[in-house]
Length: 208
Ligand SMILES: Cc1cc2nc3c(=O)[nH]c(=O)nc-3n(C[C@H](O)[C@H](O)[C@H](O)COP(=O)(O)OP(=O)(O)OC[C@H]3O[C@@H](n4cnc5c(N)ncnc54)[C@H](O)[C@@H]3O)c2cc1C
Image (cartoon, rainbow, N blue to C red):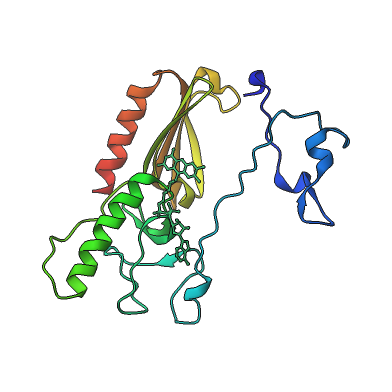
């Protein structure tokens, strides 16, 4: 990343404490130690819009807590799917989390739809949510592949490579309470893809 002029900064070091906004100095380069930037990308995560649901006994501490059928147990007739829904993933049954991925929005929306039909007394084929989060993207020729629920992990190990040398390829395993919950691979082009697929297959097998 450094070779492409990309550097990572923690948000706190860039925020003006008086206004709670990114300090202009950080963007123009007039501040100490910050060089001029062509682009600054702020990546602070997303905050679900759930305030309107609070006060009804529904757990909205991070999205809407739902069960495997996307039903809100605390309030009959309430369902949630997509980014806003928090549920347990097949890889990390003890932890609940939101999955901010298109694939998860589609799968959970489908499952929530069949639960709504069921709730209304209709007949719908029950859709299983035994789905494992999988995402792939590419940054500067490095393919990033992730599977599982890395956010729920408490420890990790490097299976291949060195995290300070992503260009040579790195494969990591992530664990929660000593249980494998995710694998991540960062490598140029298709390198390490076969190895990632092998690790991902083992994770899938474990989650069945
Ligand atoms: C920059 C960016 C890049 C992404 N890239 C990828 C990617 O490469 N691959 C991938 O898998 N996923 C990606 N995602 C995530 C993906 O877009 C989301 O997981 C997906 O869109 C979630 O769908 P959703 O229907 O749950 O929520 P959304 O698409 O967020 O739709 C929710 C809708 O509800 C509306 N809304 C909110 N509150 C209320 C309210 N109170 N009343 C009425 N309407 C309301 C919102 O305005 C919005 O239109 C990306 C997301 C972002 C932001």
